[in-house]
Length: 332
Image (tube, rainbow, N blue to C red; front, side):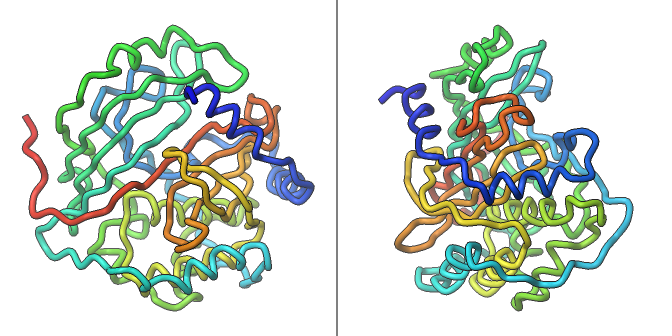
């Protein structure tokens, strides 16, 4: 099956559910304009040619410091969320754990697909990536090696000429590069092992962490949901903190279960999800048997807000392997 057929298959397996419509309307109540793209999840990503890019192999952190701190709202567990996330919490510790030490690196191998824009066009960028991140310290000390895959059209749009820069790199193995030029995240947004291994191990404590300095602007639950993803993608939590994260995530209002979801590697699982202010259902996908985290997926539920047909997949990732290394490859 070619990539376009696979993308269409992704669309066909996503029903439009009334509870998701209601959640999208709730999130957008009180908003006069779509939220800026800065509200999307924080991620290390090799920048590519285009409006969202800087240079191949260089990743940039974008940080928006919330202006007004607000306490986490009361915990309300929903049956839909508990179905996936509580099972994931219960299965934590059933598989061998990694125990990286000072001076070592965690190595993440993954595939990803994300929206890119440039020169008035929009498309889907894809890559295979391996990133070495220090157990303690800044991502600036990390190393990224990325293989660019053929870009795909953004659903409902032709592939623009701006995507040609990526097409020219297809089939050329990437060289190790610095993972980031700078890392100015606030302390509470860190996701290196030295920091996350000291996070709370109880549900209420982890929930307070997810809502740290989140403004009470109607989008606080979605921002907390984004922070869950920041602790899952290219981050490794010890078992106690991981279980607390899943239980805390299950208490975020608006989280629903998606019975069938597929990650960027084509693996099928079950997901916990929330609708973003941009009309996209942001899913965290788990293996249906082991409940190991597989990856994420963004599925359109509001065509007008997302500028794409309902059911379209506009982002996805697959976490393929996490390991420990004494050192990363050298950077030329």
